Length: 274
Ligand code: ADP
Image 1 (cartoon, helix red, strand yellow):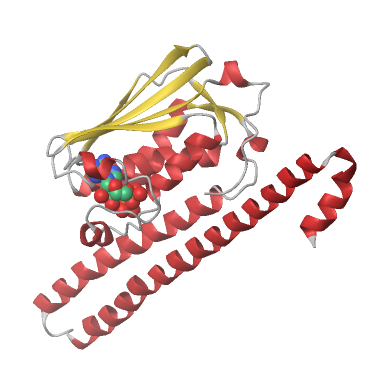
Image 2 (cartoon, protein in one colour):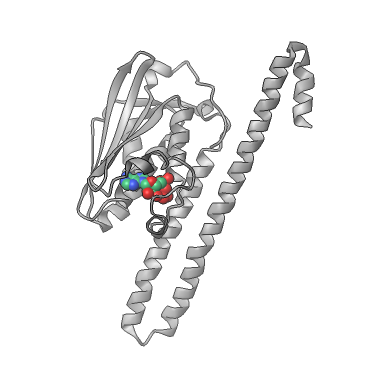
């Protein structure tokens, strides 16, 4: 239907172009199918904490004369509520990366605002674990991009840094301008003193649904989509995300994105979903 209509319209332009366009539509359809899978998967995961909360609240009511049991159940309710919050955040992020062309709404985005938003998102979890978050170098830097997508990307990196770090450690966020042959870039690096990532896993963590330790990640409400979203956002902005890590010592994830002034009049033209 759609593909045929498009090919008929461009037929005079030559069959090579037609072929490209038809391939493009197939790709769009494939991406749409993948996206539907995501939503179904995350929606399914939502049922677990909701079900648990419902059972636990009944248990609390039944145990009203046993303060110790009530406290135990309340603690588990808190864990399930955190999972639920994280899953909902993941759905919000997914909806943010669904635009066909993320750069259609591109604008200069202040790095200090992005960093403040990302830290706010993990504030609760960080204070719970007494993790100190600190940012530097962000003043006056601006990225050329889609604000919601950039917030989703940085938010995920900071969230992971907090999630995969032991209590009483530090998460640092540092930004700087980098001059490269292709134009100026902004680099935002998120550094933690957490569990780190092995060389073997480093190659795979950006894949959808890949988790080094599913049990641990599940406990924090992770679905393994976070870094796939980060990679997608970086790529669709004409940037990249890289990781340095040493097992048991910590990790640094660096987002490299176009600087606002340098890219104001250019689009990268990349579209599509994850
Ligand atoms: P998740 O929802 O599981 O956090 P992500 O896609 O964000 O999914 O990350 C994929 C996996 O990469 C995680 O399950 C975790 O094993 C690993 N990971 C991500 N960030 C870090 C980090 N800062 N330190 C250690 N491991 C990390």
